[in-house]
Amino acid sequence: MIDADRAAPSPEVLRAFGVGESTPEPLPGGRGLTWRAGAVVLRPHDGAAETDWRSGVLTALAHTREFRTPRPVATREGSWRADRWEAWEWLPGAHADETRVEDVIRAGDAFHRAVAGLARPGFLGGPGTSDDSDRTGDRDGNAWSRADRMAWGERPMPRDPSLDRLVAAFRPVQAPSQLVHGDLLGNVLFADGRPPAVIDWPPYWRPAGLGAAIAAVDAVCWHAVPLVRLEGLGDGVAEWRQLLVRALAFRVATLHQLGVWDAAAAELHRPVIDALV
Image 1 (spheres, rainbow, N blue to C red):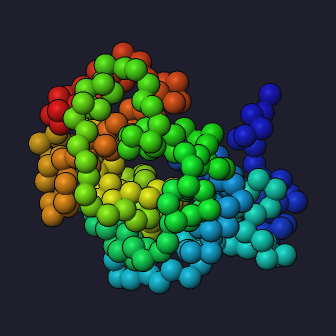
Image 2: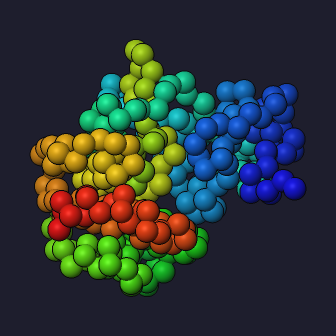
């Protein structure tokens, strides 16, 4: 029986995005939900508000020598969505290995500088948007978004010894918030002679250094980067230690939300928690 969430885009969707003659092929990563058809990458969209906003931003965002992004692909009718799918320009490149964490963080920093002046979008909620309540609209059922809000004291944390230790280490963060990319490490592509490509942007409204902090804890916890490198990865980032604590709390809370936090996961993360608290 085929998992409907992992099924390839239909011929109707391919035709809508102008690649009806192509046979879709699954791409690695993307939780097994991403497909390539010719020069287009298709993935399930994240809700109308977020998808249309992100596509509008990235269709016009100026690239630099330090980073680029894929451009969104509209349907023949001019929409950014067809059925449950969105589409993006396919960019050649290879994902970074553990030796290129600094390069990922540099590309993320350049991306964050480029989007620093953008206003907080309404689907993220909060002051200055159409939603000032403790809700996230389309994102309320998203495990990552719930965990992000937990890591910043906007939702209650699950009770867990690892999270209890991290929460006890929370201190106020003074750095201003802006739009950030919340999953850089697996979403920067490198190709010879071209700027790094920042892809699959999950937007959050947090201090800019959080993107680097999440990449750093991911590298140490999941990609065998030595723990002694953790501090140096944030060279020049204000409040780096506290951002690392929040980033790790975000990752642990996400695993809780996904139902995959267990004794093995706790043991894997314990050395980093010990170092931070």
